[in-house]
Length: 129
Image (tube, rainbow, N blue to C red; front, side, top):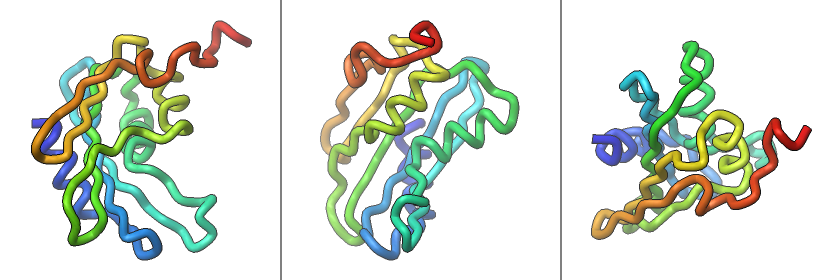
């Protein structure tokens, strides 16, 4: 279900520069699902990734506990490919998610499963401050 919602979100991506469309579906501990897509900007630095879009939507609605996220990506009109979260998204996820938070990546043929700790070992978090 999360992967299906991530695909749906990728269809709403605003990616006029890279033509790379990403969708994410974030599952909260309470069972709600928040979706997000990448939103590009001509300055590139102001671009926001799908994972952060979903997370920020959830946080803005009062959610603070998360179980899993599914992420899909593809070049517009191209085949899906495994699309792991970028470093910034991993760090933002680490702010709100436990080390065992599940990250699902799929290319439509295979699905890979990771924990946040596997993708971001030795993360910088509030214990470091």
